Length: 109
View 1 (tube, helix red, strand yellow):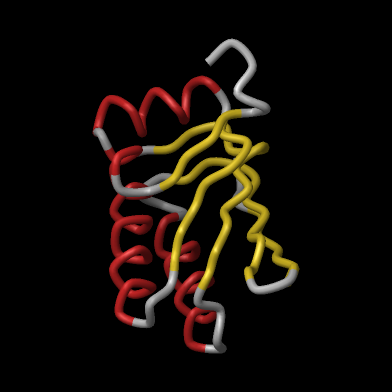
View 2 (cartoon, one colour):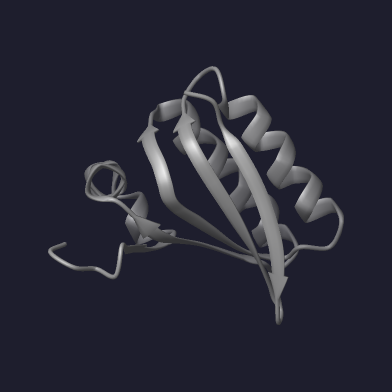
């Protein structure tokens, strides 16, 4: 499955739509995309993961690196609409303690 990325600016934050799998093959593209957004002034990113089917350690590494870059600029990172499997990855790694994460309407989570 390929990775699709798009974004839109809403008020003071940028919502990044991510669809597909975030793995060792697609993580570099995600890293570049998020870094470009930060460098162009996006200090508050919200990652909409409603269509993310898979997330591995390479993807988590991108998110941690993105969080660190944002913190240098007093920015923030949040994840919304994460499905059950993605939420489990965040909770198992305890990354949900450093990145604000919400599930798909938090129904049943």
